[in-house]
Image 1: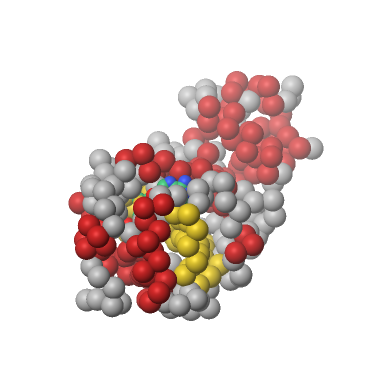
Image 2: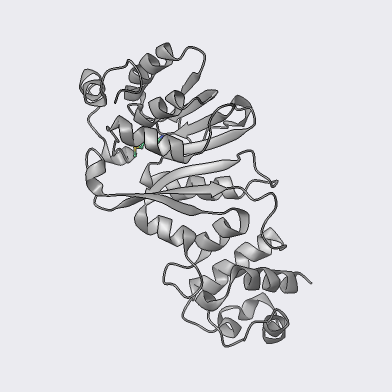
Length: 278
Ligand code: SAM
């Protein structure tokens, strides 16, 4: 199936000499059926501005435009990809804005109009940093409605992990406090060119209208960090410096002082952060 009149991605790669650079986390998706499928996982794109980070040769970009996105704003750090992306912009006049920029430094907000979805096959080396940034804006709800992002499978598992599992930690608590993360699709290394060493997964996040349980954000973050930095220790010991009465604060939050971080639910950590605040 062809989703537009543009050349196949293998040809785009060779025409523009886009040999993949490891330093930029370049593992390209060249199957347009797959990129169209990932675009569909983001939900209905009609009437949405879509922010795409790291479009590379533009496979996912083409899927997003073919799925009816009102506009795609694409941030790509590698200048070699820009001519290939410009060819897509010619086929979708006025719908694709391309910026040769580092997504970690670029303030994209002024280029986007709500409602906004963020969709990306992220470079693995910046994926978690961008996710944390999108989950911790100054105000909530955030500027985006949904995130649909490719991660290493191990990171995807940390995002959706529940108490008691080895993957449960800071990322699960932050993501689940603010959104409803779900793994939508898993991809083997062979889906990418060149294949990475690990499996990947697409995670979809719906922003909650407000955080799932009330809690002061700063204290929740610092308490969770302290608890998981010494995840094998009992909380009365790992959180000793948080309060001189930590045992009482833990009990008032419904938590046994001898419990360990990985046993505590998101609701428990929120109650604990509220207790520490008062
Ligand atoms: N979306 C394309 C696809 O699915 O084939 C490419 C995905 S590849 C995993 C990641 C892309 O992100 C590369 O094109 C890379 O150049 C770009 N990139 C890496 N670091 C970036 C950054 N800090 N800001 C913007 N783009 C970046």
